Length: 420
Image (cartoon, rainbow, N blue to C red; front, side, top):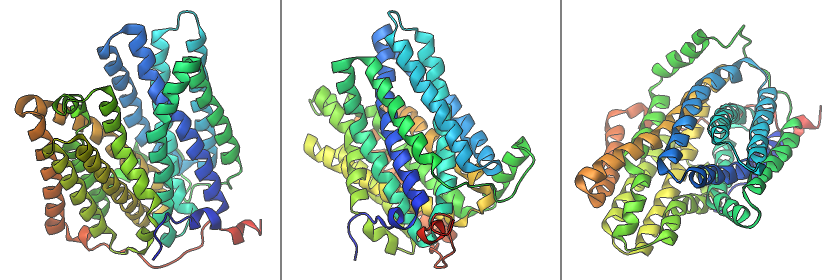
């Protein structure tokens, strides 16, 4: 049985390879900017509240353009939309670099451009989610999503650290400039992808077209289950907002705080490297529920133990379980969504996945403030495991979901590319 990450999608599909390279490079640059923006806001204002307002400014465009961008992804050529959106993201990074180079950088620019960059990220994410299933076959989709998780978790783990080094050695301008360079590389990679016109041509991306996607979701318990189980896991099982208090409970300092933040991503990265076995699992609904239950148990144990090394180990295990859950959730959604609705469904998917951690921060902060850090973390983990059990009992269509075995031609196969 294959153990290490399956690179078959990169070998057999040129277009997926180009998409993967472009997105891996640009995402790494984005994580540098993600680290630089709050740093710059805080050092210009000396206010944590101002940093929190930056998150509020970015959340609105993220949720809005997740849905709107999904509608456009179903209406226009996905490659052209990806190229245009990448150009917008490049312009945002360039504006931040220019502003940082001024003698007196403007604070309003950080909020406005940060919000625009968040909207661009939402659009690119919906395009990527709807484009990937067109580039690889049914059996290779879990491997393709695992490969995406590899660069995603690596970027979240290493990118902010690189950003900190760049800021410390060369200044803020260099961090944003590095992001500009990664988008230039991404544009070259995306430009080489074959055209991906809409499957069904519609006249416009109107509110009615968005509602069509929502009506489709309302009638599919399997897709709604993938959204619901992840939302529950993020709301109750993501104790990110409690990490500062957890550091005090563990008698740690800034170093431990940084390790807590990176431990979940590190676990997910390790899991993605040894994800070769995921392609053999056909009972993908059960796999999601087992992974969510494992996430909950690991979080609960992390709340009970007092040794920092054990806490970090449990958070890493939780990250690995979440990575496995994400692979199968994405594969299930891609399998049961018609090609002409992929953009809109992907937009709703991103909105749910982006909103869950934010709601989770609120839940963790409220419960932690009322009942204590230990109770908030442990109860959240137990709630995740209990939710997985409830889904297994009540949503039989999801727990019995089996990956289809049919294979259909895809646009990115080497054999097809060679005939063009």
